[in-house]
Length: 77
Image (tube, rainbow, N blue to C red; front, side, top):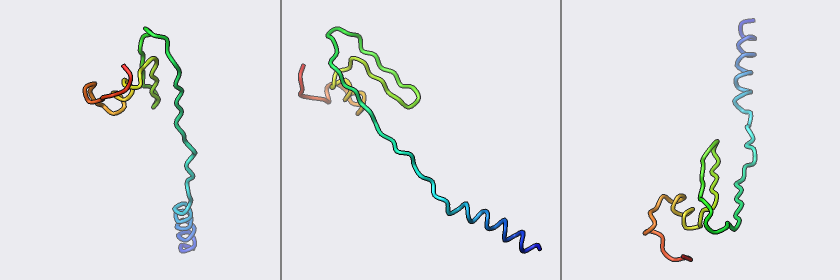
């Protein structure tokens, strides 16, 4: 009887060790639209999400790669 209980308990732990977890599909989304000149730039980070409003591509590169303005050359004014 003692061995039967041990076998039952060991079987429960071994069975759970071989179960597979399936990762849910994830994806990133970006929406880029033309902003009116003179608009205020706004950004915020919350719940793992970053939102940038009225940022130029150069400004996004500065934030994304943690570089200073003199380290990025070229592109439109």
